[in-house]
Structure formats: C-alpha cells, structure tokens
Length: 282
Image (cartoon, rainbow, N blue to C red; front, side, top):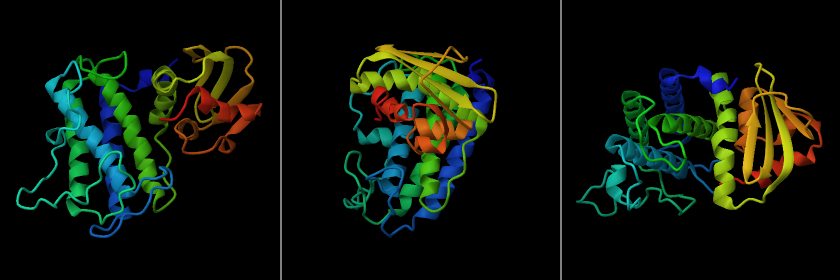
C-alpha cells in the first residue's frame, strides 16, 4: 500500500505549516540581518540568502498560479509583480542585496525584509492550498495538474529546505515519518520520471533496487526499463541492491542529503551511486 494514502489534505497542510515554521526559525537563527550570510553545506554554492530567496520565490510564484487557477504558467516568470517584492520607489538600491535566481552565491549583507518576505510567502501558500482543497485543476509541470499535486510537492520541498537551513547551525532534525514515507513514494512516482526526462538520462537496462523502511512496514521495488520507471510497494523478486533505513534516512538519500553508507546496504554497494546516473539531480 502506498503510504501517501494515509496523508489526506488537512494532514498535508498541517505538515507544510509545521515545516514552514521550522524553516523560519532555522533561517532566523542562521542569519544576522545586515551581515553576510553563511553558506549552506547541503546546497553547494548557495548562501542562506539564496536558500531563502529560492524557496520564497517558488512559493510566491505558485501562490499566483493557484489563486488565479492558471491552466498555463505565466508567460514571463521573471515578472517582479509575481513575487511581491518590497520595492521602495524612493530607493532604487533597496533591492541591491537581495538574492537573484541564477546568480549565486549571494554574499551581500542579509536585507532585514527578506526574512519576513519569506515567512509571508509560506503562510500565503499554505492558506491558498488549504482553501482550494486537493482537486482544483491548475497548471503543473507534471501530468497531474491539480492543487493537490502542488501541496504534496511543496510540503516535501519545504521539509528538505528546512533540513538544509537547520544544518547551517546544528544537526538537523529528522523528517516526520509520515511525510518522509510519502516523499519516498513521491520520488518513484513523480520525481524520478521527471528528472530522467529533464536531464536526458541513459535508458534503463533492467536495473532493480529495493528501498526498505525500517521504522514502518513499507518497502518499494523500483525498476528501470528504457525511459520507464516502474515501482511497486512490494517485495517483487530479487534485486542487486537493497537500501534499508528509516523513512527519513531514505528520503535524505534520495534527495542527496546523505550518502548511501548511512543506510544498511545488501548487495552491490556500487549500484548506490548508479542510482543518481539513472535519476540525475536537478
């Protein structure tokens, strides 16, 4: 059984809000407005300002898409009006120190308004998703074009970047087990096929992996054939490599936050690195 069945819309909204609050706490702990931001160890080439700007920008962009119930993405995704930037017309240099997508790392002193802008972005997105429910048709980059797709996707992304932000100053907390198990399933259902398409990954030749959750009853068998990623929530025959760990640790591996040697490997350990040839990072 796919563990995502146990996360209904209200549960996902609650998880999103909890992860957003933890992210806000972590970035406020990591930065001192007016001083240079620290770098983010788990996001090479990004400072904390870049992490805040990335997540806040994505969330404000999606809030616009969802509120307008757009069937296609905005024609100009660089339009500043999509992001509610606090531009001061009287001060043309007010935005000079803000992070700009594609220009990393941002090492200028952290603008004080950036933190509130980020927190508001998460709250606005949560409120919008909660109000819409899971079934409203809306644009997405996935074949699943619903508000529910975005809630699932953004809850996972918010959690991953909360982990990144906490890692700047202290050992980060593990993910909620329900969220992590859902993120593992979502990787096989959504992210692996998408990443393979975006990066022109090599065709699968029958490679098989098993991911076994040690803090719950769930496991997933994943097979690559040609352009297809097949996953079954079952012990579906022999595999060359099984990776076992808590749902949180499996999620951290799949999102390249922890190496495979933090898991229990059964079989050929060299195939762990090959996973990221089949499912390239983006």
